[in-house]
Amino acid sequence: MQVIEPTHIGTYAPSKESQADKGIEHLLIACNTCNIAWRSYTPMCCPVCPRGIGAHFTLHENEIWDLMVAVSYLDEDATFHAETERATWKFRNLLMQYATWYNMNSRIIIQTCYMTLRHQDWNPKVAYAMKFFMEEYAAAPEDAYMYTSSW
Image 1 (cartoon, rainbow, N blue to C red):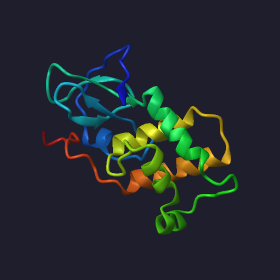
Image 2: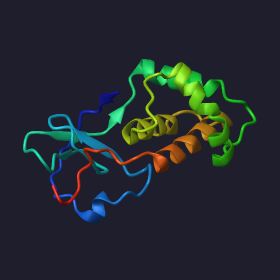
Image 3: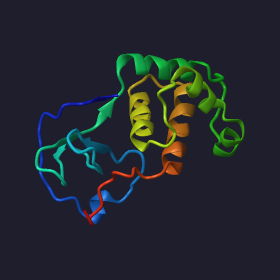
Image 4: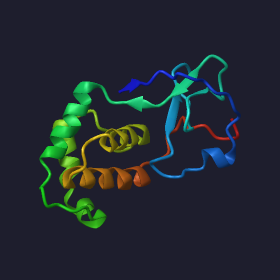
């Protein structure tokens, strides 16, 4: 994964409200100096260290390729059902085989995969994968380095 360099840097003090988990669409960004992660829709100066600038992540070209290969092996007529997917691990097995860098416990990686698929042409396989990542994100643990107002 690579960091998207910000074009405009804002400063603010993250609040309890701004850091509340609002789902996979609420962007996670991380400081490239101290590795603290927080939620923001725009690149921001790190709320912990004065040197870092946080930005969101994107997949490298080869990681996008890996992800899309895994998606391509889904059944054309598959529709996502969380219960069925959990029982079969169908897509997770494809990710383990073709996108070995994928980590089901990393919300940043899960979110980055989801955001990558948002920029692909829609088809049933992409829709399945996006729903999968939404469920993965909801089930994944919060990052140990996630900013809280108690920092």
